[in-house]
Length: 361
Image (cartoon, helix red, strand yellow):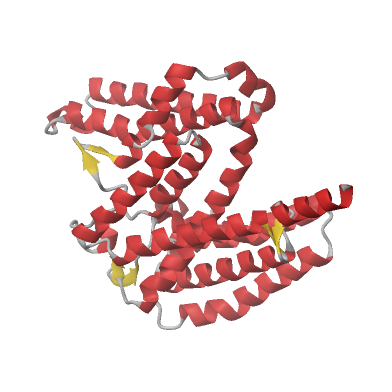
């Protein structure tokens, strides 16, 4: 009887050779890849883009009505981070997406978090519990509140002192309020949402990790889709691949195999997608920040390897990274004006001993 029970539990926990956790993770990755690809393909098509937004809102409403706020935030992060922004990079101001859709002048990034804000106001947030169990997160929240407050105060001082003739600008008060709203409201609502999850769904918080990693997987897939279907953007006077601004964090995917104890196959998949995404970004969407992040990654990995005493696996990945850098940079730099310009700018920032360092900063 006991053996039969154990067998049933094993059947529930896995399907064949793939665990249930892996299947759920793959589902989230595919979901993020579809959303990111659709955002790229139909960002200039108002009808299709608005239909996609309607589906995204329906998914969020379903999660909220089911009371699964953790899944709500996970889907919200995918919708937000894979959505395109800044018409200057797309080549037109007539584009559509989750972040660009507005109701009464307020974008969906803010509106979608308001239900959780009201829920937190109704049920409350267990601040003492969060302080006890997640002290570092609590300190981070306090730091963010401090930055919000000081930024607002200094902004008001600049207006009162008429710094750079601010008071001569048209509608300077409304512009200031708008900037405060953009820079404060979204991070504040995200902090409140995470505080709610930590208070009422603390056992589910770790599942958000899969949604965040899935977002980066989805962005890499959207880069491939943009390349295959020639759906291009515009940056630095050249054609680029269409992608979210979150794409600058793709190199940090290389850190994940050292940071968590994933299955070997999952580590391989992460490394493959990180390599493809990094090469595509450097070849078609190079920026100074992205290049600096790429240069930081081997140093961070070496620190993790030394700290955690990782030997064979760590050295293998370091060798792979070294090979990619040695053979990949000449391939990327060939006839690539944007990469060479951004590479020189990034190197100029690192050469702090040079005469023009302050100007480069």
